[in-house]
Image (tube, rainbow, N blue to C red; front, side):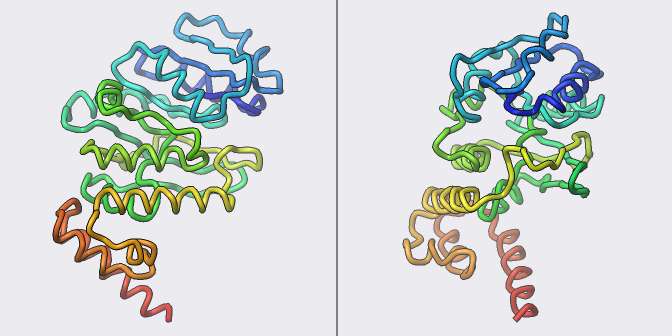
Length: 270
């Protein structure tokens, strides 16, 4: 749990983890030199499961997450933002799923938005659809995800500070290139707070970094695709489909259905 400028919501986030039905975990709270009273709030907790990290200088989100991953002793890494809430059964559901699906390397759950905006976010459950979704945007709901630490480590997969604020999209796309299996469950077990100070507010930088991830993903998965056609995506979909006939990285039928549906939508819009 990285902490930076989220003091008004920190106790709610911590309490939601401490009240989980699954109890065999360590909560690594990473205070990245937060300029508010986060340290005083943390001082009020006396739970042996809480492990604190207090930086001497601000590291940045991706770097401090990597520090936490390095500190973690568990089999799994579970993410949690310090301004959100996890429902009591969240960890149990995800751990049970990973334990019963040894071929799956990461699982996230649905999010309910609250605060300045309401709604529900649910990503694709089918791993093949997850791979295709990554062509367009981050296919995993980062803050509600749990993954196998060993599988990510053996493939050299860590967050990259240079890719913030698309560091999660970057990590998932590289994991997919390495052949890892990512899944999203439809159960809504995470409450995602929308407020002006959150780290994931959409900005021009977010768009630019996400575009960079998208281009890297296309380059790695479809090496025969020319730079011109890669840069024309997603305005021009079908060159990507035909390039995939050579590598077969994406499921051809699912990709065709996705592109056909998008093409029809674009035609209607015109």
